[in-house]
Length: 170
Image: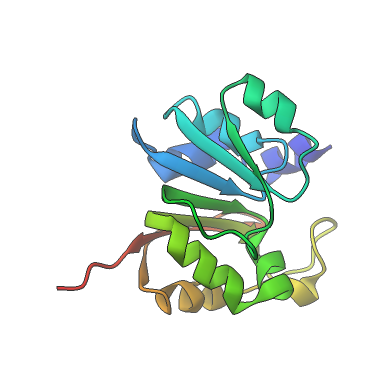
């Protein structure tokens, strides 16, 4: 069922991975990556992929394919350094759970890029309650507040995909 919904909405792994333009040698952290759906595809592009998740149920499987794992919440994690911080359908939860602390921690671990895939704030038959979904304008404003600039975006049927780059100060 989940795969059918992904396909209908244009949310395929190929669509997302191609959009990210992952380069060989990138270090990537998939925040809230659970079973590594996207992480496994990222591993085809680079050999440094980490899943950060509070639930370690899939960690043995992920480690077997070469994905590093960190069992914690982004609300409590700020010690790594990654070229790309990727979040799929979790940013709205992070804002609800720990607000600005999540944003500060994401800023600390993101060297160059942040990519956020999340639900549009529209009613659908699946996904989180509309009341906690965030508009892409809110997400863009949050990331701009920590000096990340939106460089590209993609509208999907039920989601938006935003790609940010750290602004360099002259």
